[in-house]
Image (cartoon, rainbow, N blue to C red; front, top):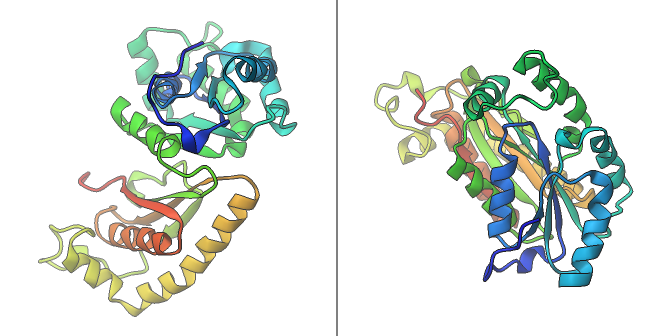
Length: 297
């Protein structure tokens, strides 16, 4: 168990329980350390059945407003199977958020090899065998997660920044939306809740004076958003996002990732992601644009 950091304001997360789980090597320890720095009382490698007991002990010693983070993973062995039941029965008695950390196999293998540790489900076989078994075990939990963070392209500082943005700055009762631009040639973001394809718009790449610029430049943004089809899309897509956002809140889901793609993730998707995030903000939804593949070409 870790003591919460001194002097960190957790007013927006009073009484919250964050259950941290996900793939081995995806950054659970890093996320837990950041939550500790944000003032959460952190418990690592806890059998799920003991989560209610930890909450009761914290209630008695620190009060029911102390936020708690619990790291639960396959190291718990057979006990891990009880996590879904604990969450489904809402036995925590508190507002509970399930944070799932994900990464692709190549990255996880590289991280595990660098750490020189066997995978807990490797069972004498290859590291990839352990990862595949783990994905099967975690499949249902990933589907139930309130927030999925894909750490494949993130360093430690970028991951801590994402955790801080999710649990250190948002209002507990509001929806937080991340609008991610990306290039289809680099793959679809695995943590996307909704996907929009901007390849129906003319590509600034074929305009010589616009090619070296990005969708964050005014000239490219004007070229992309100035098309009637772009405005029609925005006018029809934003009400859809509002409907989904309201439904997420009703169902207790407070995070939404909207992926906006084009061929290379430099022009159309960037300009439209910026505009979608801005319009969501105008509608009272806490939204920010993130450009996954900008500068990658």
